[in-house]
Length: 125
Image (cartoon, rainbow, N blue to C red; front, side, top):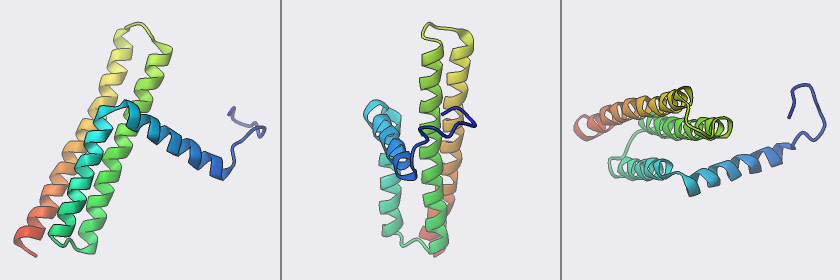
């Protein structure tokens, strides 16, 4: 939609359907999101095993959501870069690498937070 135009603006419901469509597309086409969702499921199972408290659940779920969101944004950036630069260009490669680095950084920090939460739950709760 072009900013300022009100024609053909999707309804609230259709906006959610577009979001679901994007998520399903990413699940079908991207290996990394499958790995990240599998890790999130494993973390949730461990959360039940170690009886996380409410605050720990909030932290763990927020980290899972942030990593998933970062991967979705990375996929979006890579898709747009591929659209505008189908042939290799160093700047296109840098853009994709930087987006992937964002996911990597988010994943590392989420893993550190997860370790802190679970070490506390195992040894101090």
